[in-house]
Length: 162
Image 1: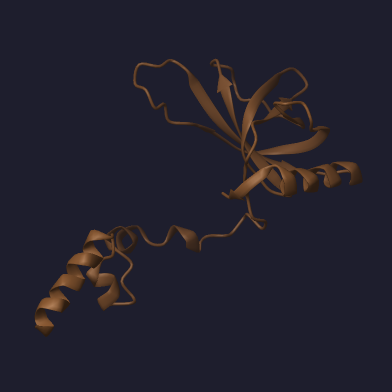
Image 2 (image 1 turned 180 degrees about the vertical axis):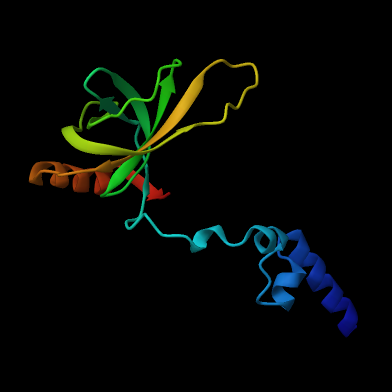
């Protein structure tokens, strides 16, 4: 009877995604991690927690010669990520950002930024010609009003941790 209950508990763990090897060996890290190593051991660049936006929020990236509007993906006190539609343009070095809600009841303008990442997002449909990019930006030299507006946005217009 003892062996049957042990066997049933193993089936239940496998059914819910629990691996018997993990429960048997606490040092087990999985085949992929043993081969490739742990990618999280590098230098940690992000100091503050990122949050998902709960409302439809947009950002307008501006450079000296160009501007782009994108949807906010996540945000923290030190920076944010935007998803922008691109039409084959070269990557710009954006220096300023305006943030605004789609309803118009919140906006912060003239935020100095530095672009830290620019990656092309995978296209979900093989037949689509639309290309999206994900821009990661870091805030620089925020004024007192911009910091207060950013804190207000984080408290009132974010839903959870990214």
